[in-house]
Length: 68
Image (cartoon, rainbow, N blue to C red; front, side):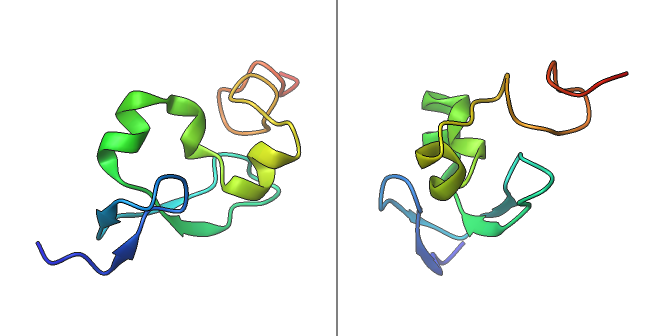
C-alpha cells in the first residue's frame, strides 16, 4: 500500500491509523505497525505518553486501571 503519512512516534512511512488506547482521549493518529510491535505503549498517542500514561494506567476496555 502507498504510505499516506508518517508515524506519530517514529516518523516511519505508514498508511495505518489507530485510535489512542486511552478512551477519554481516543484521538486518531498514524502508527507504523513496526513501531507498535517494538513498543506496545505506542498505542497511546504522543500527548498521552507525554502526560505519563501507560498501557497499565490508561482507561480502556480490559485495562487494569478500569474499575470492574
